[in-house]
Image (cartoon, rainbow, N blue to C red; front, top):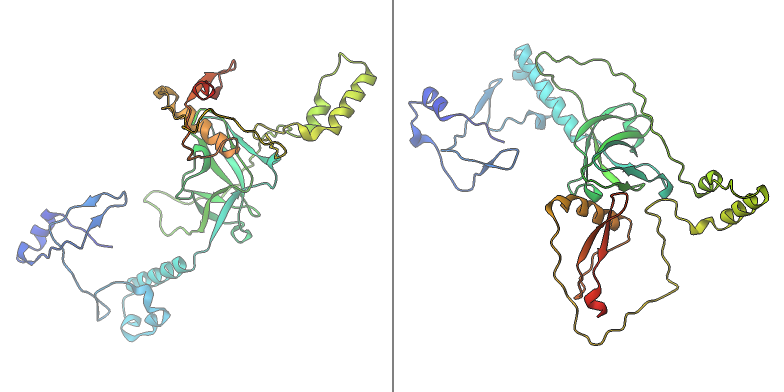
Length: 333
């Protein structure tokens, strides 16, 4: 960490020194919080005298509580002692600040969270019980969230091991967020100071409610309209559906798979059929990206390094949603 000053301030306050007193080097590179380089003319190393002692590096937190028992500090003015105590408290709190992971709540795919395109949703998540009743800092992972979802650092309230994290779907298609998906980490925080004119108010309790659509296959069977059948036929049809309910998907991502069959495609030769991709309209980039991420999350597709390649073709369904097709005509010819 360094403290910077403008060239005009240096000329005004340190004019007798002259620029020849400034040191320059190649190993000292300054960067701002956004990663951009900060150009500088030179640098100075200054000693700070406090309580009758010179400190080249002002890191008072490293001295420990014994610092306040020393004679020079005990005789220092009240504001100086208060500042040292605050520095020591901040350093101690930073070293022992607990953290914990945040995951989407639920244990089975039935509790999947559906986030439509262009919508922000409060996702109920689990976290360690030690944060209960506290206001903590939520930070998303550096690798980002799955399927193009976004979450920003924010202060959240933890209630009995549950925290509601705001997640945004910046795409145009619905994204499924499965239970136990990692959303980020929580860190204990405390308010050190507030800007001028800003006061802290007492926390209030807000009730977050959401509508849950019945995704159970049994519920769908019971709600099925069979009014065209007689009562006896309705009972028989529903009994049959209940018996084989395992073959029905509970949601869009519940596709299932089988390893009972193995399918081979015989080819005329061993020369790989590798086609270039078809150009995608720029207006469809985000929709295609979100749809591919959704297919990856649902394990419908997977990344491949095969020498064979066929282009995808975009097809719009009647309801306006996107369907990705693969052009296998050259492979089949």
